[in-house]
Length: 175
Image (cartoon, rainbow, N blue to C red; front, side, top):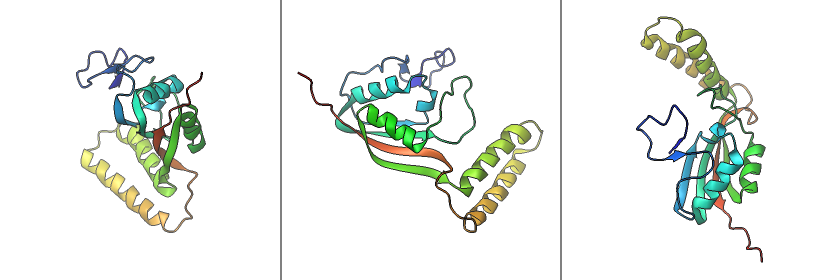
């Protein structure tokens, strides 16, 4: 599924479009929904999460990844970044119980990944350097980062992405 936009209307790589209001599925349709790096592109994340909660079957699961530290991408459709506390709050507010939460790519590897992206976007994409040299630069930085992560104290406060597994909670029926 793709978010409905003028860019996506003419692409044929999606099966369904999300109009920003309603997912095009009946309630209680899915055992599991996987959403990777999507929520930051929704201008109304509460609406999207309530729709995900609606189409999940009772006691079924959402597997979700969202960025914490990352560059702006797919401009102008990149609206948010999520701390671990922010994403957990959003999910719980929408009747999704967090079962697992992990911070992905923490500490020095996070810095190296950001540096790789910066070098690509700011330097290498603008120069006429053969792709094989790009790979050499990235490999060199990754090796340095791998070594440095064993020498420098680890920090879980700096990370690229949140990975969450959440279970649908069916709210009590009001009389």
